[in-house]
Length: 232
Image: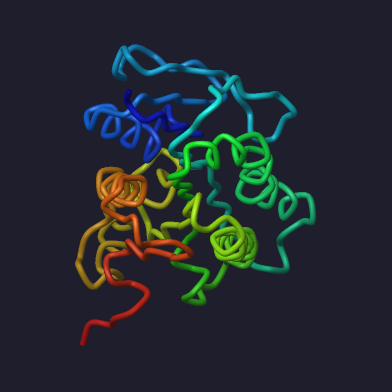
């Protein structure tokens, strides 16, 4: 029997790449997003309409082997310009939405006896960056949750997160909207490239698979070297 993985936010960007790659690797994939997916994803994928900021319930099997939570935000503002409602929105999508999904999934992940949950943080949690105070706080909450739940649910469920730098997705379009912005952001990274959904999906598939069976409570930095090295 194929293993079942739930991907939240599986219609576009990183989530879409994850859905395609997991399906190609033989997983039974359930993709949930705010709108039903178009026909450009594998026909075997089961879709559900789900809004992480609402109160809807997911329709899930009794057993899950994996959970991937992809929703995120990019609202970069000076601290004095941020309104409390915007901070609440960041928390709602990035952290509280993940909590809501987990509350529905955790027993099903435990039932499999080999569950793996993967979340997304950001390089800006570890590396202080201007205008990132709201998103860094929300993703910092995700990192804290991952480490705590990794301890609480070992050995039956593994919890890890990926901390990307700028990635070529619809969410980041405004940061890559012209040649000047693209060149500037490329040069900031030691590897001199912008991340791709495929880069992130490769990391997700590793953390979901048995290849990472001895990995839990980790924040995997897939960031072109941004968090750990500087070019001369």
